[in-house]
Image (tube, rainbow, N blue to C red; front, side, top):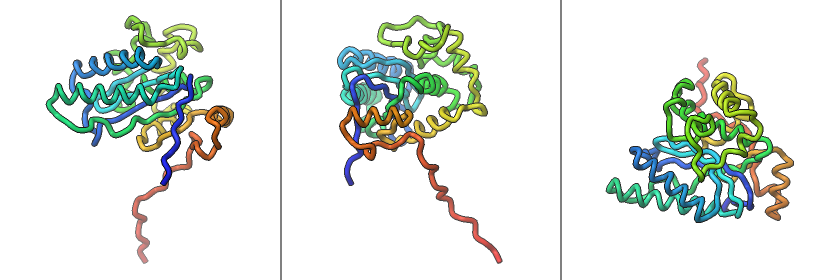
Length: 243
């Protein structure tokens, strides 16, 4: 079977995530989280990537990344290997830490940038089934920076996501006023796609955006999956008919 194509056109936006192998914890304590962030910072310098949003959960992470020079794959390989080495040395273990290659979704920044950022910043709510008060105390995401509760570090870029919001408070309302029962269709569909770590090469955008990627890559549309996919078949055993 041919390998699925992967593209990283210069200037493209990506929602990136990875989970611990076997759903094991990848961040045990604050030192681990701080170590991962320091490696993120090193990657922005070494590969020129931009970090626009992040959320670090106990057994996985989410990033909104832009790669001006098309260096995303190299940067993420550096991040994964560097952090795994640090984690293994500190916790006296060996072997893989993450579930293989990172999962990446190419994002249409004109239409879905704020949707992806909201999804990333709401991850503590979505994963832990908490109300939005958890966002006030959760410190391992960029939301506090976006809401003006924490100074912006030099390595974090926020103006692109905030460009459609008049104030920090407007963005905070955008994130916090969305409830599980009131998700727009695009957010619900995005959440379904993001939660599946085996779907590689998904594009989050409309047909025009997909066509522009095809033209840029010099390929055919068949190389890419549309971001809206058919429902997953129900594989449960059918109920027997008695008679």
